[in-house]
Image (cartoon, rainbow, N blue to C red):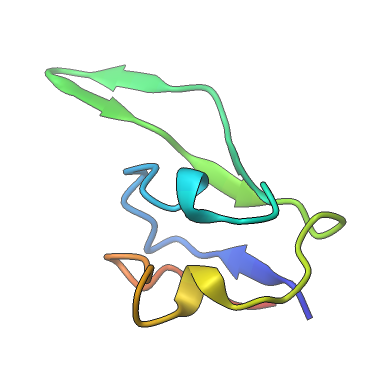
Length: 68
């Protein structure tokens, strides 16, 4: 069962480089004042359900990634 990104996502992009399968894909960056927001989505074809994105070590700061 792949994972999905919920509305709780902070758009920080923290998860993108931590996915070992490259399944978390960054969408177009959004410049907002002095911040760069990076919306993401999870490609279900690349996600192998390893759980890295929800693990204690690499968890999402907003806990926005959940099982689909």
